[in-house]
Figure 1: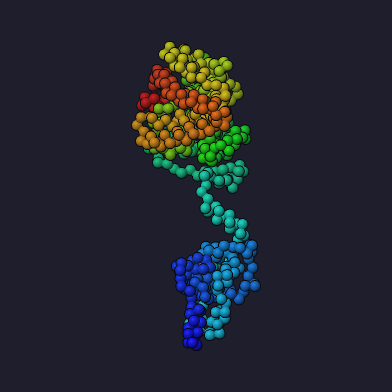
Figure 2: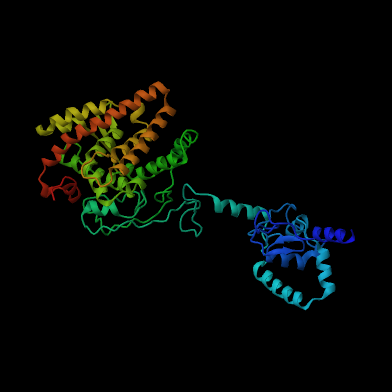
Length: 463
């Protein structure tokens, strides 16, 4: 009986069987065996040996509720020691080891403490800061949150690193525009310095940043424009807000005054205005993030096939239905170009009729809503049915994003029924644009190619 009682007592002091694998009960690291009565890792074993008698001396700098893991165990000694005791580590075993004075265990202690010293260098940080770091590490940013800190840009400037795309080895104007790095949209050199004049050199031009920009370039949205975007935050996703912000940012140079004065009665002078506008529009389209993600050859094809449609949409935004004219601004004055000027060339009569009909089909509440019109601009850029595209599905996906954005904006601005009617009407406009595009191309083809701007010659495939 005595022997049996002894055996039961002996068995009760043996470590329990491992049911869930060799995992440290303190920090969940890989355990190496039972230490002080608990399955634990080498690090927690050494930690307990060194600190078991210091429980009253070690204080938690936070709220005595730190979570102890293999990563966080070094941040709070007090909570780690408390957990050691909570899972069943017994300091009596440590006392017995000291009494025995086993030389082998002394050697083990030295090795354990050496490992612990290497593993547990003390890092003193506040709990709030630690939680913030852990949250930031797990967050996936939807947009750039970097701000200029050196003072080079105005305070609060949000920045974006430029990632180089496949270089273009062509020196043609459209190649340089379509593949050039993202550049700021406004105040290139000065408020009235126009980089789009016929003498502008595409290959040497490098904009000088003078204002803030986010996130595709480096120009902040004016406060009134910002308010016009912020009102959609409850109906648009973060990605859709970013798309709309990008369109507003890249639209800034298109609204900049023309540098050179032109004769509004001269068809050739009006054509020069068209060429200036075309350069700005191509530059704007080429800097859209979704556009730059396309294959270089696809970018060229989209610009060549859609440049007239983009001109027409921009013309709709500048059109005044009251006096049937396009309004243009110079540095010190403005001019009105009557649509009747298209009648000067008999070959332009068909285009005149179709163009005027399209202009008059736009209501003022649609035409004057910049959010709607800029989104329509983007839809026109990404035309997936253009011939010879390498990846039309990617173009289609980009256009679909802008169509979805357009519908949400319309449903915010109008009742659902009116928004759906406007949406259908704009879908019809996209189709009509393809027809007007053909008649406008005939006007370009009527000019002597040698007298045309190099960019226009390439867009029209004269070269």
